[in-house]
Length: 481
Image (cartoon, rainbow, N blue to C red; front, side, top):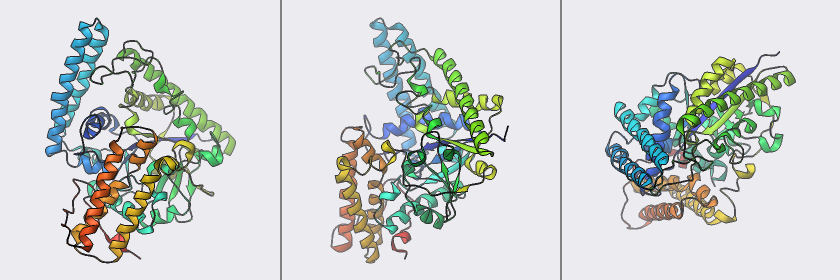
């Protein structure tokens, strides 16, 4: 048997800028929930695990504020809001005769107690805790998770990439070269922009050109500009991330959509009262299945190609713990089962040391629906796409004109970055979050207009800051030749 190769797990952690922009049902409670159910438990889980963790700059912008007032609001959310609604709903279920459901609600309340204790133990410094992880490799991304192929100008693209990398360097003491392409959105030539900013590796989805389960998905690709493109293997990803057949749809797991009066979830996917211990055992079975399938995939590749492959499974970190309640239990078991089963786990950098890249054409793609850009650029979101393009062109034009005051241009650039988040068009396309994304787009569009107006007439000069967004912003990329 040829050398097996290795599995690279990539956890892409991202949250649009919601701190201070609304609370319930849409707004900063998204961040608070993700911290309680994803980021804090993940920190405890990862330790010395050989996993690649992407932390988008816009998520870090919000986490960086937590030792201050936002952190106090977060603890209030855990101890007042969450504790109160768990107590109220468990009482209501008991009164209605749903004693097993009520018991599950009381058990789940402990998740938020544990989150508060973890948070206080870290003194709110989640970024410091991520930086202190021993083995995981930390990646960055563009400043606000913009879909880079859809940006209108080279200057706009440089601004997103440079601002993201600058913040990562300050927060984590350097940049190792790992860069997550938002939505895995790639177009030929993008690697040149990445190379200019020190990027060494990025992930792509090449399912459409080569096919589901193709051996090409296990082969890193050397680009002419230098950075290495690492294909994600959708055959492996969909074991976890499929709404029809992935592990999370099993009847014993907790149902994300079945809610009590205050949006708590004591039911299983099968409609029965959720049983936590039973679901935990199932997570271990699914972890064992995942490891066995990964081994077969790698062994099959080695037999076919005569060399080891790099099997890359990339997932949104928020899937594990939030959308799929048992996801982190599954991940913990994957780490155990891999060690027991002889499956090597590696970070992307470690994997590229073992598996040399091949030379091959890369095709334009995303990991979105249809593997194309239609989620973010289609008739359904045409108004958004044109608004972003118009705002970018006007901001770049203003920067090139050398207008003063500088504070107004800084604010305009930050409002533009906020507009360019891929999340707003995604939410509209998927009919999520009611009118929240459109309201955010209007607010930032109005802020951009006001900032640009201050450059050309006597309009009031705005504060250059936009809450904690992009604190390391440098306007130089907007005017670079």
